[in-house]
Each structure stands twice: as C-alpha cells, then as structure tokens.
Length: 168
Image 1: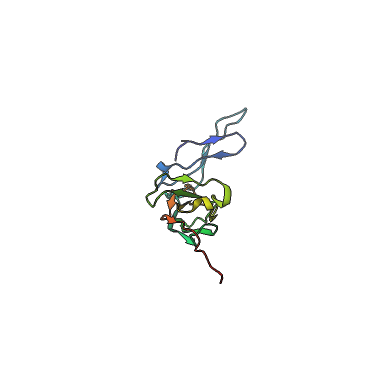
Image 2: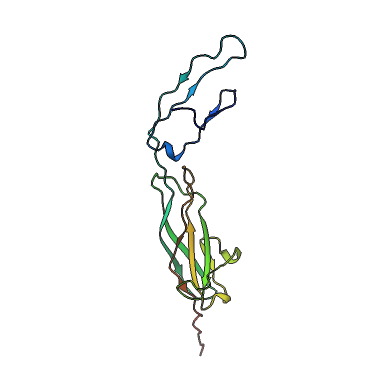
C-alpha cells in the first residue's frame, strides 16, 4: 500500500508501475477525493488487496542450433526452443548470424541484414566459404514485465565448398 509511484490526473485515472521491490506484496488502490469547493478532502476509499505480486522472469531459449547443408550457396536454419516461466507467448524475438575464422570465434563479424542475416534462415554466400557461422537468438516475450531475454548462441558450423560433380 501507500502512494509510491502513483500518479493521478484529477479525472478519475491513476497509474502505478509495479517495481521489483513489490514482489511478494499485495497492492491496493486508494482514492481521497478533493472537491473544488465545500468540505474537502473526503474520506479515502480503497480497493481490495490484489496479489501477491509475482516476479516475472525473462524468457529463455534452449537447444540453439543450426541445421541445413553447410555448403556455400545453400540455406541454413537457426533453431531454438522458446520458454517463459510464466507462460508468456513469444513476441518478436530477434536473430543474428555471424561469421568467424574458426570455431573459437576469432574475428567474429555480424553478417548484416542482407541474405537473411537477421532472420531464422540465412542464405550462405560464396564469401562465407571456409568461414564458421554462428546463429544467435534473443527471445522476446509478447507480454509480461521482463519481455527481453538474454542472447543465446548456437555452436559454430563450418562452411565448406560444394563437392564438384563430374558428368561422363
């Protein structure tokens, strides 16, 4: 209870943003009417208590991986399992692909917006040959207090040249 962070506009509306310090507590809304003239203030009226306030947690991603043929000019797909402790549905999660010189991430570079580098799929380019690619996902919940999750990464996958075929 109390008036911390409560704001009123004088037109029967007020807002309160639940804070981390409120976790485990019960909240109530109270109003003390103030008249422009006459006897004022009036008696405070309170709502019933609601709660307890739960600690909403950020969404997570697990089983982050890359599938597809790791050859140049092929399409790779980033895979992951979205999860949210409160059951909040997935919102607009973000994706990013990176290239590096080796599986340790030496000279890791973002692959920009071209060729699907900010989507779940990525079209491997000739310039990616012999590079190691990494897929990252940042899970975003569509609702809840903490909607942005941390960034989760797949293991690196090496891109190889297509095996040549010979027609006889």
